[in-house]
Image 1 (cartoon, rainbow, N blue to C red):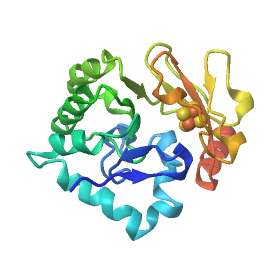
Image 2 (image 1 turned 90 degrees about the vertical axis):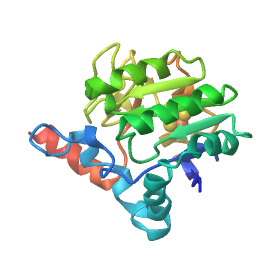
Image 3 (image 1 turned 90 degrees about the horizontal axis):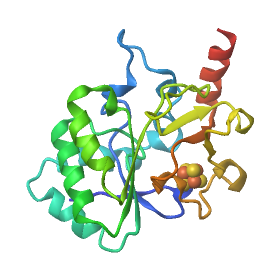
Image 4 (image 1 turned 120 degrees about the horizontal axis):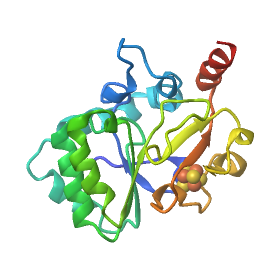
Length: 215
Ligand code: SF4
C-alpha cells in the first residue's frame, strides 16, 4: 500500500519517505561517522521518533519492492501538482531509483523535488542524469556542510548557520521567517534555482554547528 505523508512545513504538499539514516548510505564518511549535515538531521528527532511517524517509513521500505508499486504511485499522484521525495531517508538502492525515475516520467503534471546524497556513488550517476533532464524534476544534490560550503555546479542545497551566512550565489530558504512554512514558495521544485541555502534549525543542528565553529 502506498503510504504518503504530509509535513506541516510544505503547505500540504505530499511526500514519500523512508526511515532516516537506515536508508542513507550517503550520510556516512569513509570512517563510518556521520557527515556534518546528517549529524544534526531533523528526521531523527522530535515527531520523527513517534511510532505513527516511523511506521509508514518502515512500511515503504518493503512496499516499493512490489511489482505494481510504480503503477500505484502514478495513480496516487493523480491530483498532485508538486511532490517531495524523501522528507526523510534516501533512495538507497539502484532498483528504487529506477522505479522513482519511472514515476517521474509518467507524471509530467507533477513538479518533483528530490534531495539526495546518492550522487556520491558512481553507479547512481546514470539514473540521476536521466532524472535531471526531465522538465518536471528538480534533483538537488545535498552538500554535507553545515557552514555553507558547496561545490558550484554540483550541489543544489546546503545548510548555512544563519540567514546572514547566505551568499549571493544562494537562494535563501525563508521558511524561518514564515513560521517554519513554505508559505507559497516553491523554489526547491524549480530546477532553474541552482542552489538553496537552508538556515540551520533545531537544537541538535545548533550543537553540530557550534562544534564545527569551535573546531
Ligand atoms: S526554499 Fe522555498 S520551497 Fe524550499 S523549503 Fe524553503 S520555503 Fe519551502
